[in-house]
Image 1 (cartoon, rainbow, N blue to C red):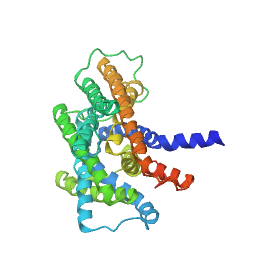
Image 2 (cartoon, rainbow, N blue to C red; image 1 turned 30 degrees about the vertical axis):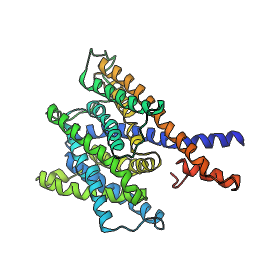
Image 3 (tube, helix red, strand yellow; image 1 turned 60 degrees about the horizontal axis):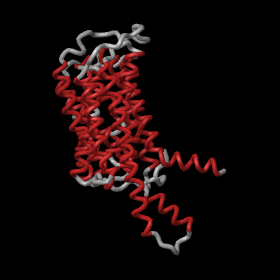
Image 4 (cartoon, one colour; image 1 turned 90 degrees about the vertical axis):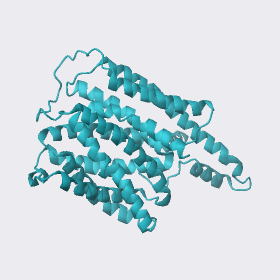
Length: 366
């Protein structure tokens, strides 16, 4: 019984970590689904629109029934705030993001996206959402962020010799050869969307304090973001044929990204943001970069340069430092709350409060 209790305690402590690792693997498969779909001829803006409308329809019944009693009243001011949040996370950012994927490659986009962690950390410090001190763990967060950023930059800017691939890859993605037609344009789009994405993560933490209903917020963002994307797409795409989706990779890509990524994964991110903060969520992005690079090499037969390997190792070191520094926040929070607990309270009640204050409470089961 004690062994089982210990396993449960470990699971509760590391549940956000496990969920974010799972989310990164979901994002990894998204890169390759989208790459294949775009080569097949899918328009990126039409894809973003369909993806989030599908996610909104999927999440609506869960949000309506499961959070019916706990969902705060939606005021006009809050609706406008969620609209801005949807624009940053869906309507604007994702249209730029998937356009950049069309012009570059999955490995490049995944690599440069690691700057989101550093940008989010800087914004969180400026807005006082993230603690920063001169302690060892505090310095570890700073160093870890900079090291991860340096590793991502090495993967992006330094290519180095090509590693010899023993085969041609297990899977071959066929399609248009002019997908990666403008590398500079794609690079600029990727950098801009990283900035807006960092703002989105920060704003999530702020909005969740006013509207602490993750399922409902996910649903609203998908519906509003999908509508915003539809308006943008209608202005950009003038061929009705572009809106047609057949029973092929385009449909599977929309369903996977809508149901798994825009639905379940976004809900996971919102839950982890409320539990651990926006910086915690973004610092798992380097893991996705490494998995994308490895799968691209072994499965798709893409070229892998030594710069990617060196940068990947540096990214892992930075991620470890940042995780270690963030873990210190949880320990410090528990210690700061201990004196406030009354000595006359029953031991069982005090234990429950300590768990809740440490951010490990099961406010919403996943």
